[in-house]
Image (cartoon, rainbow, N blue to C red; front, side):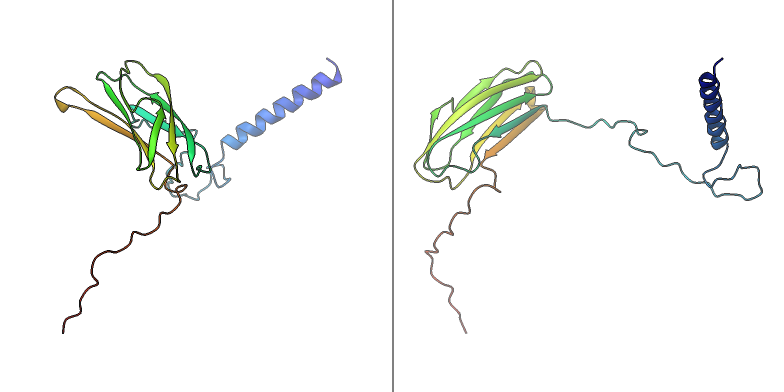
Length: 181
């Protein structure tokens, strides 16, 4: 053997011995052979050690995207992504609801979808406005199983409330309250 092989082998054996001796130590560094007793501590699970939790996922998820900032008028192109996570054994009603003053110039206002297998579908809508949107455009997808045994309702809005400009307060046309003695 040459010197390099002997040095590498010696280093490997040294590391192995250090690893074994560390494995025999308790968390406080003692070998466990002494008389000092340590209270039992529940082992802490790290995220890698924990078993993945299975949760309930939505059968259908809608993702609605549009321009940001919201245009003050003109055509607004909205892209809808329909994510099907599990087969739906009933027709799914897809609808778009427009706020006052807006018109749908492209895309179907409602349709029935057959979502028999997981995957993604896409729809595009063009909404025409003459003034800024005061309320959001709402897209919904909903279905009900036989005898109403199950169902779902997915909903997305554009623009979201954090993008939508605040609308002015409506005027109060009622009489002011009367103070009575």
